[in-house]
Image 1 (cartoon, rainbow, N blue to C red):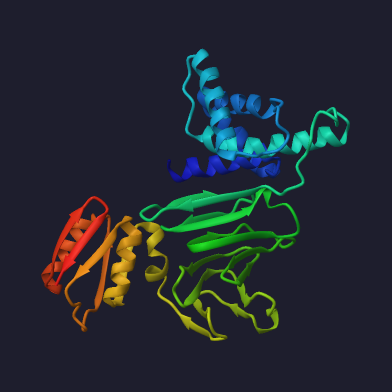
Image 2: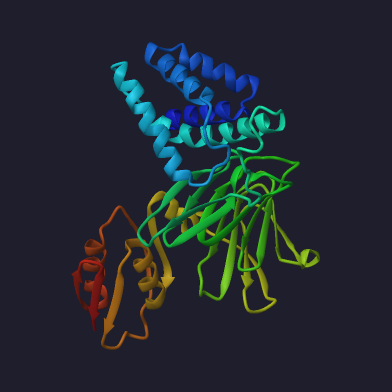
Length: 336
């Protein structure tokens, strides 16, 4: 899907959730009037949005999305038309709208209160990437998160409440939608990064000893939980290294390509030792690497790989690092 489709995708999601501005609604109208197929897309979304859902609250998100998707596919098949991939995203937003509609009906007496039990437990969205996987996630406030391999995020459905809090394990790059009334907070290993509208990378892979927040644009405040007074306000181009087992906070500059190149498919090493190379190859490709023999003490690597297979990378490395290797499914053996 190209950038224009992504933009329309996001606008349709905001329209379904009732948060699109007048200007954004006008863009949607112009898009729908562009051709008959777009108009059919909008009309079908309207139908899906206006349907009364039997379950007032979301429990199994993926299952409900698939149900809406399947139902829409059957409907469009009867009309001899084909659904666009956009409906998969729209279905998720529709569930939020239906949830809101159900709660309004409940408050207004539209449902039989004795027949419906509304759970008091908050509903969380959880997304996880295994090693070798990377995903781009659209969040309910319009923010975007690029989730790296072997990473996960968790947040309250709809970002209800006075803040937009995300729990992160691993690494992610965030493009935060601006909202002065509702700060965006990423929590990881007891460290909070607070933003209002900005773009930053947060590397919090465990069990590494430090957490790194790298600010691309805007401003963020980074502090350890319960210790806001000692927080650090970062400016664009600055990076904060937070010692997880200590009180050490070190602010430096950083190379944007080196830090966030991963989200564009670049595997970048800068004066990296063997342990770092091994660990990142395992995460990037979802493999286990076994070492036979003694690793040379002077191992250092500075290079950039983009769109290369694991085999190509290992073949390239073996000429300069003098080792043999074998690959069997998800296991790699390197012999020195």
